[in-house]
Length: 334
Ligand code: UDP
Image (cartoon, rainbow, N blue to C red):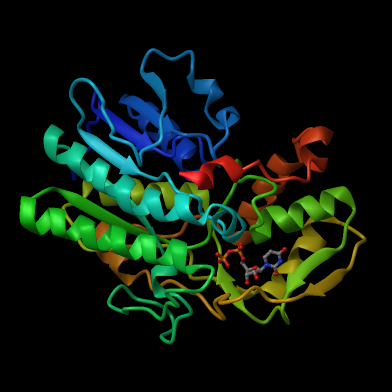
């Protein structure tokens, strides 16, 4: 594994998002020159504003579904631009499809032009509502193409296909990470995902909303572990998809109880309807990541949730009580 990344030029799309911003930090730490790109539909500049003064960081406010131009050399591209929560991609379904398809195509074209290695952020959603448990990389998935989640799931499936086509047809160096539920500081409070939702509710003194009967399961991975996995994959020579996630599975109802304990809230659990096509169970099989990348989980849920809660506690009152999501309406007209 190549380890000296000093002065490599790295393009990170979705740089102002949750994972993108942590990746910017990681590559800056490695001595790289980082070019962050984001159209700021779901990303937030506050996630990367600490990098703006650095000579080795440049930010482009750009939508990757339009032609992407980066002057000079590019060694690595990490494509992390995409809405990634059910609430977001329900509000901006067309943009979600475009960033996974047209955006990926543009970045693969850029990678080819620059002779760069490209890593694509895929997702456990390619497995849909899985009939195989835990999910390993050879499972083809159970996805409803026309359901509300289809815009995300199918964009990501197309993204994997076109990436493999560029690899096989053009000999491009490609990497595909299938990211399972990941959490940590800088998640957007109001993106609708379960962890910010529960933590926000606890902090505002609201009841915790469990969807359905809460018996559906998820397996939550702390962001530092996820970033370490992605980093190792980028530097490996493995071009087929690799799952990165924490196999420690829990039902959403048990998880809500854990959050009540952690936060000390006196609120109770209330049940709300289960969103359509909400997967019943999800747990990554991480055998491949262990064997090929020498990667493993380091942060257990108790510790990761504690760190994440510290982050949410640090939000201002205004941030905590700002209920509306961003105004996405104009982005769907294109
Ligand atoms: N969920 C919930 N209450 C909430 C938000 C989410 O019970 O306020 C459930 C959701 O139905 C799903 C799980 O928590 O079963 C994880 O949802 P999330 O949106 O975080 O991610 P997903 O894995 O479904 O993409």
